[in-house]
Image (tube, rainbow, N blue to C red; front, side):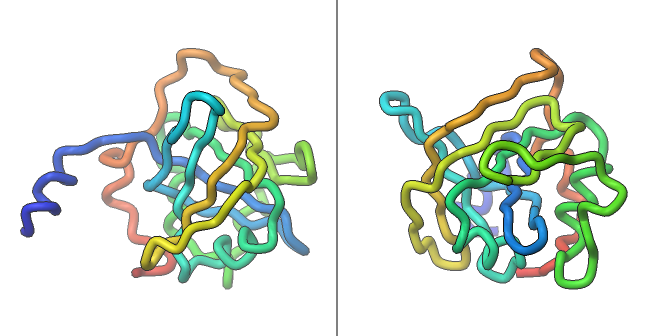
Length: 158
């Protein structure tokens, strides 16, 4: 284990499902994301370039960012399967939110963010978001973390 791998092994942070509107809705589990500015408020999500959601997000003006509640259901679906061969939204409670972005009904908190910029970060692209519409239907609900989903095999291995 490299020094940086040992450092990151100590971290535990929320995971998110990021969604994008295209001809068909797209979404994936994201482990690299976070607030990056206070004034103005900004948030960055990093999407893997091998993921179908990445291709849809490249053409999107907004993205949906969802915190997940405890349990593997949505995390397994959006992180352990690929949209190349699975309709992740079939059988999942969701609706079109502002700007047509798919929003997951069972997320304890979510926001729709306008894409301000995209950054090449190696095997991921960073999407700088301006929060436009925020919903926190379950304040104080525990959220799923990176360590909680470490056992999920990615739908698109890196």
